Length: 158
Image (tube, rainbow, N blue to C red; front, side, top):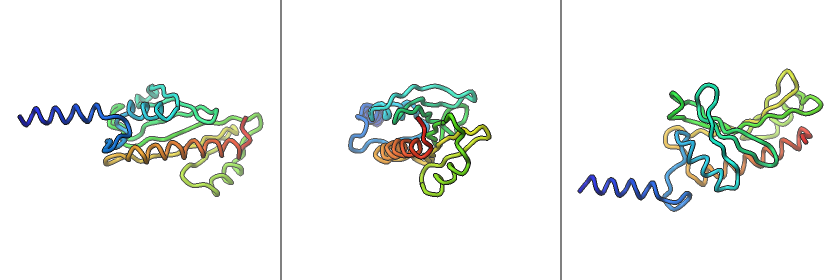
C-alpha cells in the first residue's frame, strides 16, 4: 500500500501543471523543464549540448539570440547553475570603457569585452541545493530580457 501511495504521489507531481500551486522548484539538473518554462513565457527554446557535453538552450529575446548555459554538471547531468549569455559584434568595436560604464551602473548582469571589440552580456542564476521557485525563475527571465534590451541600447547595437 505504501508503494502505491508513493507511485500515486509521484504521478501527481509529474502531471502537475507548470506554475501551479505547490509547483516544484526549478533546478539546473532539469534542462527540459527550463526549456518548457521559456516556451510558456513566449520564448523559443531549442535544447542542445555544448562541445564539452553540458546541456544548453538556444533562445532569443528583444530581437537578440541568447544561450542558456548549464554549469557545475557531472557528465552533462546534475547541473548546479545556469547562465544567460548573449554575444554582440558592432560595426565599430565595443570599447572596454563602454562595457565598464555599463558594469558600474548595473546589477545582476555583467558585460565583458574581447580584444576584437566584441562584447558579451551574462547573467548567472544559482540553483544549487534545491533550485529556485518557478516565480523566481520567471522573474529572472524577465529581468534578463530587460537587461538585454538595455545593453543593446547602451552599446548602440542594431
